Length: 302
Image (cartoon, rainbow, N blue to C red):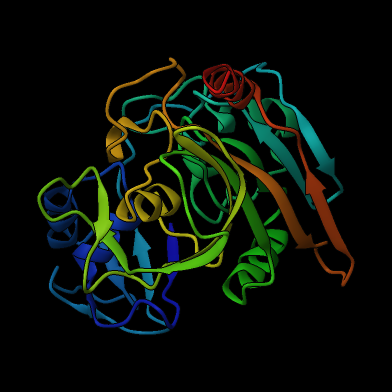
């Protein structure tokens, strides 16, 4: 795998950066692989403490401990497709790509069956086609690249903030402001590495929030992601005292209506068609988790 460092990731240790990027590996595992020479920067052996710089080229050669990623005939809901890419509606309770623990039933397994070899491989075999990801229990629109040229085109547009991703979420409590911006840096939680947190030296993270509907003790929100950090929406909303409904990782607390974790969906996506200036705008309806929760919330108002 090859990673080219962009301008936003300077002043960070190599091992810390890769622990965020390669979420299937612990920081100690990454440090061990660096010392073994399985991770190089600009084709040079370096220390885990190396401070990465813009335009550094990181080469990663870590065994994924995945013997083989097999195509699986898992149904895909394809929202849009051309010769260079497709957009799918990823269901809740599906991993975006295989990990060292789970290598079946993921979106990549389904894509390998549907696309065959027509998937980008810039991010390695277990992330074939994957440009950006959604958490297991976050459903919705996800872009997939069929070739490396389209992958690089779309990644560049994301860096330039020319791709618009909007989510809907139901959160605990009444959000008073109609529209506002959350601008708080996000990084790995120093005490709980499986979680992200608002940290002083974290990456710039910006979310634009708009209230769509208020209920008795919950609010339906639209969140426009300006940046795309891991767990960004969940961390940002929890930080203002309004965790996403049923998000037990970031503080929702007692579950009133059972769902597969957080009630969060990527429901609007606008992007330039690869190698064209044509803008594609897609929107999908709320999934069944939202219907279930909204029906419950309406019943509580009677």
